[in-house]
Length: 130
Image (cartoon, rainbow, N blue to C red; front, side, top):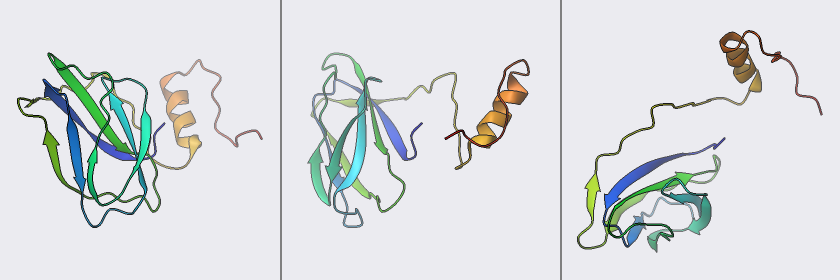
């Protein structure tokens, strides 16, 4: 599960991507980056322009880039602009058909959801064993 929020870009012909983080960005804010739904990589950013690593991007096809703020405290980022390489074009993003989103800090909500959804399961609400 990821604690933060983020956005997705679907770009045709992507070879470079830079993000200008505005003055409200906290210095050394951690961001997560995933290219074409690959593994997340992390980097720290500060106000100013940052080149985003694009390992796995497709110069001839479509590339989905996910940028996320994985931490919830003292990790504010302000995006002033996003610059793509010449010739790259934004494409409509097609969301996945199946999406799960858990909001909150209690696993009891998850166990209650699973118990109602899968009545034959052994999921029981209660404290987490230590």
